[in-house]
Amino acid sequence: MPEEVLFKSESDLSRSEIASLLRRVADNLDAGEQITLSAGSESVTLEPPARPTFEVKAEREGPTDAPGELSIEFELEWDEDGGDGGTGGDLAIE
Image 1 (tube, rainbow, N blue to C red):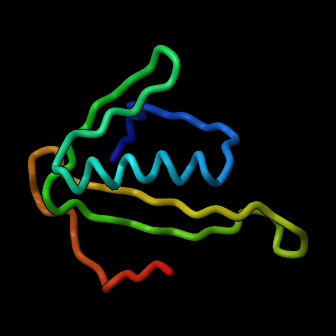
Image 2 (cartoon, rainbow, N blue to C red):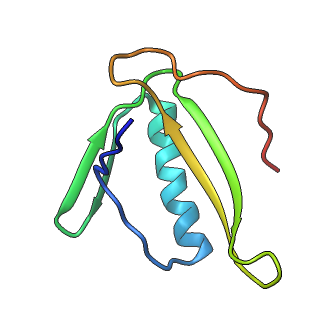
Image 3 (cartoon, rainbow, N blue to C red):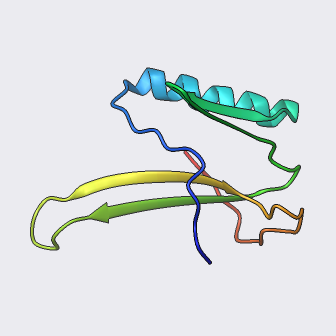
């Protein structure tokens, strides 16, 4: 299935600044509100359903014999037609 990027932003932020942005997303999810992403002149507003699929991924990119780049990715996913995105095991984050 082809992918269309609706919004993309990448910037170096402090842990505190990142936590603040994630907290805003969490607050909007708790309140059942839409989420608006904006940077410069770009903006997109999305309304996650009551039960989107939540994907968490930890990755290491780079050569196997040298230091690489580590990442943690958080993704909310749902079908535009309102269908169920899928299920998985119980997630815990500590």
